[in-house]
Image (cartoon, rainbow, N blue to C red):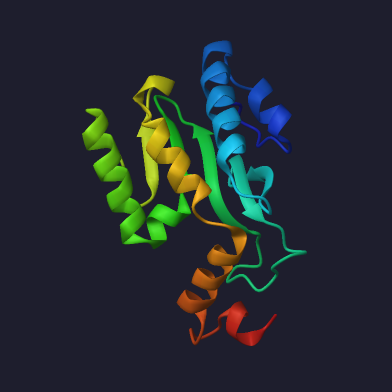
Amino acid sequence: MASTTPATVTEYLDALPAERRAVVSKVRQFVRKHIPRGYQESITHGMIGYSIPLTVFANTYNGLPLGYVALGAKKNYYTLHLMSAYTDPAQQKTLQDGYKRAGKKLDMGKGCLRFTSFDDLELDTIGKVIASTPPSRMITWHEAVHEGKKGSRARRGK
């Protein structure tokens, strides 16, 4: 990845070597096919992200769009961040069970899948997880988690 942070998805992809760009582009196409309406693609935290625009939901804890999925190319692997898996233990279990059934190795943090090739991904399960959370559900989760927290923008309505 280039040393400067790209401002657009096109700049992000153009900064990748051809073989890494091919993998990220393929995963991006897959995410775009499965993501519910209402999420907007942009660069967020130095990755390709899908979030709820501030024009739709501005009461986030940090003043940034509410993120749902992010895709990035690291030095030696790729990442696919799935906030629904981070927030919902049932989604984590869905991923674990899907990978096990497929006989694939799941390399996952709380909600971050790490992979080294497109073939490492268990696409049926990931597609179901991505498709399962419309923006309204992410907003409900966010409000439940952040309501009542000291200094919460969601609580203050700012």
